Length: 226
Image (cartoon, rainbow, N blue to C red):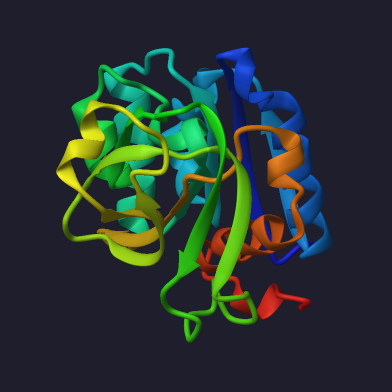
């Protein structure tokens, strides 16, 4: 019998390959000893008591809309101690019309200048469980997310803007958060902006980072195998 349980809810915009990515998540968590349920409906967020019995909730649902009842159920579960974790647009571009969702997750996507480009992720805290063992710099070819972020997040990795030309480049260089954690009541929240496609999700360093973020959010660090 598994020690941990996770719900992965996938759907929304097809351009982020939600079903394929959800299956990658399920495989990695399964190998870490999780009992994983995959769902393609936001109705899975409606059962508050079921959600509170989980260790981890992973939304993989770009854009779309969420009802107040569904969002409140997720929020209450996280407040009670359930982890919330996600990547790229699947969590921080999930429900653009819900300010409460953005408050819960810690950020909201607004742009990816240059679309898919080469850029570098700078790991800032290699003492954390999530980033331990990672190189200090990770080379990525994908969308470089510009996000609006909660100033209370704990940043584990950043990327330098601007990489692509555009009117925003006139503001000069700055570090944009890529990976962060935050608290929501008793719950742990993890986010990484990496993961536009299955190929990026499966990149060795990205997959390790993501999987460890999931384990951390679920308070399941002991399930780590590497």
